[in-house]
Image 1 (cartoon, rainbow over the protein chains, first blue to last red):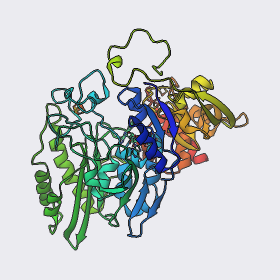
Image 2: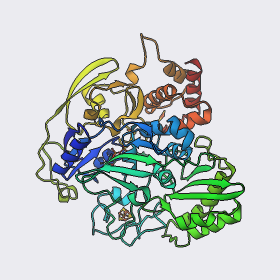
Image 3: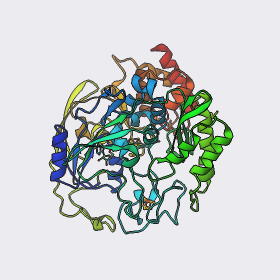
Image 4: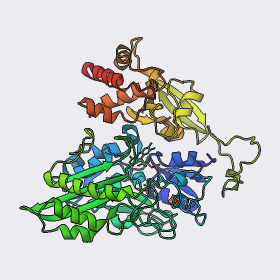
Length: 338
Length: 181
Ligand SMILES: Cc1cc2nc3c(=O)[nH]c(=O)nc-3n(C[C@H](O)[C@H](O)[C@H](O)COP(=O)(O)OP(=O)(O)OC[C@H]3O[C@@H](n4cnc5c(N)ncnc54)[C@H](O)[C@@H]3O)c2cc1C
Ligand code: SF4
Ligand code: FES
Ligand code: FES
């Protein structure tokens, strides 16, 4: 690890000021991703600005009927918060599918959004990687790419975003509140993470110096019909190969609204609103779900070692929509997939 | 563990080419106040000293183990302000003012903690390297009160890897301690 200075932020304005004064600094929250990457020399901040003492730890109802989650709420507190358990069980389930109990106790909501890819080459500073060192090349495209993207990738980078929580937040149409040197602003979740294009060094559309202050959920929580289905190499404590967040709302037997977000398949949680729209008005049957899955994966492209993900995603989507329709969400403790 | 010592041998073939490495001033050591197993401790540490290294190397509390040093094994699990965390992925300075409980602090008044006794009763270890982390993690699990079944214990203990594969006995030991708590 390269040496660095350490300072604590007194409040959000102070955190922003400190970052403006030293653009090669980094905020540190839970530390579970940043410290790992610093030990690998992938991240080399000149200074850590410790934001853990900022008053961004509340989960509270908004006047609009939604819920506002402070950026420093630990993942475990969020998953077990009564408002989340009862009204947004999809979010609770996705969080509990990720990492371990210890890590969830440490990890913050903001840090979870900004965690970086688990691409092996990104982690290995002896290999070329456009995300770590722009212009150096992508080692994964013709290398070991079993965990990599099948949707939205580019010639420059085929990495995936590894978060589970973000897949649920995408499905729920959350918003991200940020503060920075300019005006405080709100970013729709779909616009928060980005596709790699030819600038894979940027994971998100956050501007230099900006800090995430909160994540806001709209009122609609899909608590009756949802599931988070995570498929991985071992049953717990492993990143998703493919994960599916599905949420449905019914009008009698017909689907009134459908949400479908995929993890482990792209540089961002993957949604396709057009496919969701085609499910509206349909009855919840396997044929409709299979058509939606085919449509969503129409442009999917596999690489040498990850083509299996296309079929895995197709079956995962059908299974997840079935679980959601039946009101039988995947248990995150009993791993049998029903 | 920190690769930033004052006297470095030959420049590293890769690291030395990385931008931003040259010309960094070595930062001052920082004061950190911790209460460890009920005892107040005042430390002077470099910013990059993890809580794990502070416990082991500065306070000689070597019960907490370093397995992977990357959050992947749980051997370094301790309780910070009553919550289980992995001490390898947090810097000591970030924990200024915190109360830390390690495996050395679980036994009270000379009597083993119920989890320690249960691990003995159920033969819940072989080499024992993962055990301090398993026991601290289980103490956190019981305090959280979210696990009711063996499946839930297994899931919520998945952050603690046992290379010897003592899992069935670990689960049995935790179930015993849970029944008695
Ligand atoms: C062994 C292991 C297994 C894991 N498994 C999973 C898994 O299965 N699923 C999953 O989803 N995740 C998993 N994770 C990742 C984990 O969820 C993330 O590391 C965690 O959410 C990051 O949050 P943090 O608060 O610790 O972030 P930090 O490490 O503190 O920060 C991460 C990044 O975010 C920036 N940042 C933090 N807060 C803010 C803010 N408020 N505003 C702006 N920037 C900010 C930091 O500067 C840094 O760049 C795993 C991690 C480990 C180590
Ligand atoms: S996939 Fe992206 S992160 Fe991985 S080596 Fe290629 S450029 Fe780097
Ligand atoms: S040493 Fe901390 S988790 Fe392995
Ligand atoms: S007892 Fe040997 S690693 Fe668990």
